[in-house]
Image (cartoon, rainbow, N blue to C red; front, side, top):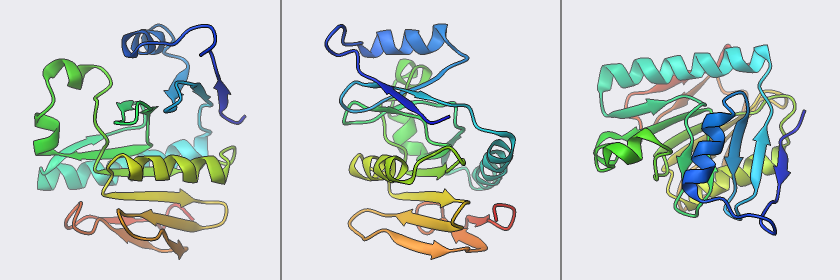
Length: 191
């Protein structure tokens, strides 16, 4: 099943609070919202993708616990990007000072911040172009490092500000560079 985009703008324009409430009263459905205000209904991942997402999140979490430079988030976290989109990357990380600058209420709901780092792991039902567009949206909204991992063609696209997208073929590891200093993601379980 592919993601489904629904445009209700001619009928209703959801406020941020209404979108938050919609997500809360429908916990079995994963919603995102693009910058145009269209709802995106995301299908659940299958077992193989979910297993790999978890392994990535665990590695980021262990690094984060050791270095304590920020806060790490799983795929159930939705972020309100500066362009108005509400997005849920598979894994995200925010530098501590930026996270601490948010109010307790902002941290509790959908934090109005673009993560410093995101990972998107494509599932077999994901389409490449929309996922690349999502990565570019993160970049346009302030990420400092992003990884798009495509199991099917065994590539990783690396997104960095003011640089061309770098494409790696079947890498065994990825470096967190200066965004996640000392972090090395082991990708052997991905391929």
